[in-house]
Image 1: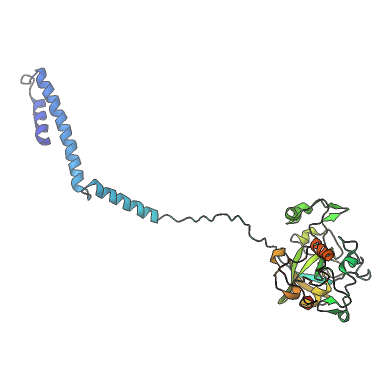
Image 2 (image 1 turned 60 degrees about the horizontal axis):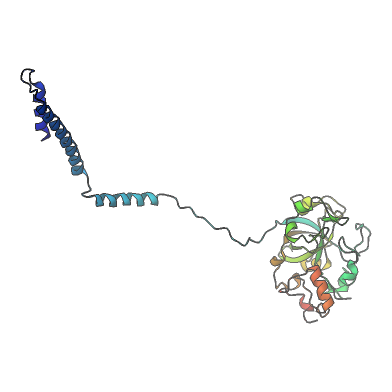
Length: 314
């Protein structure tokens, strides 16, 4: 059809001027023939495309397109989004390793390498009285990690580190910046946020938990070590960076000067059933109302913890 129309137009164009039809109606007919030719050519192209397409219908093509889409999606790397928990994970503090460790005790007199007496602490001017007496380090005066002369009113597992967050009744300028838990436990101006904090102490395959009750040895300003990455500074005790009580010494089997590792821990991280290591004292005196209030004030181990086995039946 398209070839016939094309031939007609071509022959018409080749006619001599003398033979051409000049009637306006004929001119209109020629325009119609040209339009029909264009439509015929377009239809022919479309027919050719359809004849070469593998899809007989539009539905078949749609199915093919969906298949391509699925294949493309399979090539996309999956992305996993983990929702943020509403409960923050337990904060972990780094271990301070190979720290020279010495022994001190409540009521210790000044002398030798101990320039400051320990009848009072950095935070308790009546430490000896509030503790219950002189915490003798002598093996003959101790049994089951406590002195034989009296039952301590406070935790016998205590320690000292060379930093005090309070001076002259006010926080030191750096305290709020360097103490990790400062904002969480702040209770008022000059109320130490370091006192009674817990640490884990390990020696070999043994470990115990103790509370921060004094400051030293020798220094009260070395926050770069206590809360940072510095090592203890040189001192008369071979660069000691931790003082521990006789109870800690006995439980870990430490020499008068030894080496341990230590780490800050939260109260909730103190194991509930560690016997002597958790050091919650259960005595009839602690069950008395006045001592219960004092016990709460010094913030010893949570109620779920077990105390010294030897004192549980006291």
